[in-house]
Image (cartoon, rainbow, N blue to C red; front, side, top):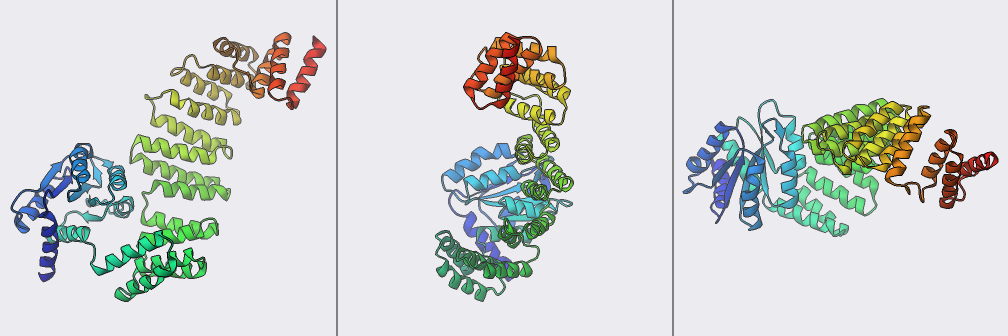
Length: 446
């Protein structure tokens, strides 16, 4: 009871500050009622400080107004609200207002979300159903994590940021004296040794931090970063440990996939890339698009099949909302399809793009190239003619485009036209051997 009273005092001192507000974003009426009872009856607040909202969109304006004025704020937010994760809201809020005190809520059956919520910026997580004492304790730890130890940790982090590594090490020892085996103290010690170039001692500190808190994510992050670029197998080992502890981190799954890709293990890479997309799907279509794009960039040039898969996912995420900005993606997808000999699918892809840009000469040119690669010469000629009608100078300054135009028209019997395009190709690049050889053939036929 004495301990609970101490926590009550910490919470009351904070909530009784002028303009203090407690926000809750939840559709759980029982928890909202429980929280209001905790504030008004258990803690005995003389006035109502609680504001309840049913969506993250609704809370943004009043919350920002308080934070911008520097008023004290405590935010309770469901980790999952109406079937959608609120991690994007938490991440953005924490990035814009690092001082924001956020307590995330998770229901039964959602325990796997806890680690991820801490990673994206929640100061604390309450697993529901929660007792009144549990709510008060979590609020107290969020408002005032720890006394003297916290002050030393903050000072140590500031010195680390200033690269004053020699001053950091004595403070780490002080932390470890107050709290023996402290993972935070050991990690900071490792960071200092790393800054001093003492990698073996840094590794020893990180490993000890991990041994003292096997379910704590931060030491594993340090170990993964330590091995990144130095030992691919150890890097993967710790990345996969992180993935098991926090399985909803899409970027980490993507990075694991990329590590397997670098090892030539395409099937495992694809498995993790798929999982990255699944995780991102839980967030929002915009995140899916960004994730698919980042994966597509990594596989482009190394695996046309995977490039096709993730560029398609990127476009599917925006289906019905395509704009001219998506033409680059359509063109990349077309290239990936053509590299696999799928010229018909490439044409179908470009025709979809024509719906958003019906007068884009580049799309007609790409359709012409695909037709030519598929052995459909007359269709290639027609497409090139359409492209040149829109922009007669389509090929100027680009020897590759000029050569492709010349090659198609020459094979279709347009010798004079081919000659001009070849001369344009050589003007753009005098060293283009293909253009030189074809021009010799053309001139012999003239």
